[in-house]
Amino acid sequence: MSATIHILLADDDPDDREFFAEAIQSIDLPHKLTMFEDGQALMDYLSGVELEIPHILFLDLNMPCKSGFDCLDDIRKNDKLRDLSVAIYSTSSSERDVEEAFVGGANIYIKKPSDFQHLKKMVSDVVKMNWQYHNSGLNRDNFLYSIQ
Amino acid sequence: MKFYIKFDGIAACKVIVREHMDKLGVKYEMLSLGEIIITSKVSDEVFKQLQEDLARYSIEIVSNPKNQLIQRIKDTIVELVHEPDLPLTTLSVYLSEKLNLSYGYISNVFSEYTYSSIENYFIIQKIERAKKMIIEEELTLTEISYKLNYSSVAHLSGQFKKTTGITPSMFKRIIERRRLSAHNARTE
Image (cartoon, rainbow over all chains, first blue to last red; front, top):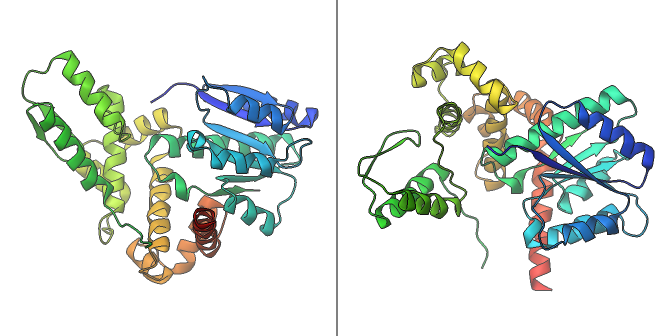
C-alpha cells in the first residue's frame, strides 16, 4: 500500500483555493497538495515528461483561458493520464451538468459546499472513496461518485 | 464487430500467476484466497522477476503479515459478493468462520489500515457487482437485487444512490453514452 496521496486542485478563485487547502489539512491520510490557478497551468504540469501520475484532481469548471471541461477532455484523450481520477468541483448541481461531466469522463462530481464543515467532510469522503478504487482493484471505468 | 466480455477476475488472476510461476520454474502450492506457498528454493532475482512480471497485470505480492490479513479479508468479501447467490449468513459470521478469527479483531485491523470499515467495503463491493450486472443487461434490477440479497429493488436503488450519488438508471445511461462517444470517436 503506497504512502502519500497526491492531490491536485485547479481553481481560479483564491478564496476557494485557500478554503480547500485548509479543509484538506484536516484529513487523516498522508497527503500532498499541489494547486493551479488556471487550466493551462494544470495542463502544462500534467504534460511534464517526468510526471508521476497524481491520485486525484479536483477541477473547477469555470476558469479563464482553459475551462474545466476542456481540461477534462484533454486528460481523457491522454493514455498516460488514464488512472488519474478527476473530480469536477463546481457551483452547479443540476442533473444535466452532473451527467455531462460523467459522460465527458469525470469520475466524481462535487457541488462546492457553502460552509467549511461540509467541505471538510466532503473532501475526506471523496479522497477515501478514491483510495478504495486505487487499492482494491475496482473497475475504474465504472467509478462514478456524485456528492452534494 | 462489437462485443462485450464477461469475465471472472479471480479465475483469470490464478491462471496468470500459475503461468508466470511455471515459466520461472518456481514450485508452489496454491491455497484458497490468493494464498501461495513456494516449495522450492527461489533466488532473489527470480522472486524480483516474478514481482515485476505480475505487476504488469496489477497483481501485487503482499508479504507483510498485517497487509496479508487485509488482503485476505478483501478477497473473502470479493468471493462472497461473487457467489452466484449470496448466502444468508451475516457478514460478521461469514468472515470469522472463513478466516478463523474473531470479527472484532478482523474489523479493527481492517479499519486501522484501510480508512474504511468492513461494512462499508462490503457495500462498495456489492454495488460494484450491481454495476457490472446492470451493464451486462442480462438481469433486471429486481433480479439483481434478489441476487445480492436486498429485501427489495427499492433497497438496492437506495443503497446505490447513497454509495454513488446517482441512480442506477442514470448510471446505465452515462455508461451507454460514454461507449457511444468512444465508438463515434473511433469511426470519425
